[in-house]
Image (tube, rainbow, N blue to C red):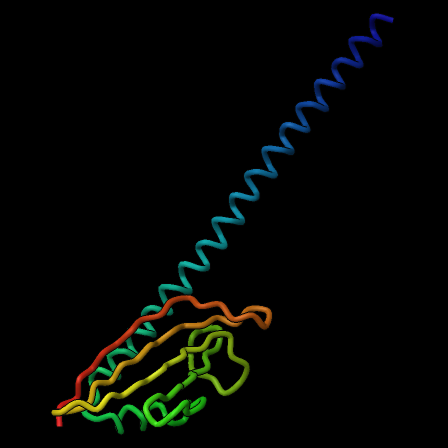
Length: 149
């Protein structure tokens, strides 16, 4: 009888150790998955910021509003009114411009305001990720550029 009691307590101790180990593995695995997802989001956001800065510099370097429109005319999404234009640049998994299925978009809203000595161009540039048909904004920047007459 005493031998069975020792054997049962040994098995209970082993089962408790296995349960504790399983709990530790589950927690550690969850931490690794969370760290991976944050790493992927951070990499996407960094690439998005670089792409948005490139588009901002394109707008800032333009000598006229018509030059800006010419650069983005193939990506024109819709004209909201005479002062506001919206452009959408489709990008693939590697952030290259694509005509196929896009995973990311650079969304550009331009607004020009006539001033006494020129035009004030205001742009909002946003990076958007398409994930399972849901749109998620990664980051956005605002750009102001004055074009003298």
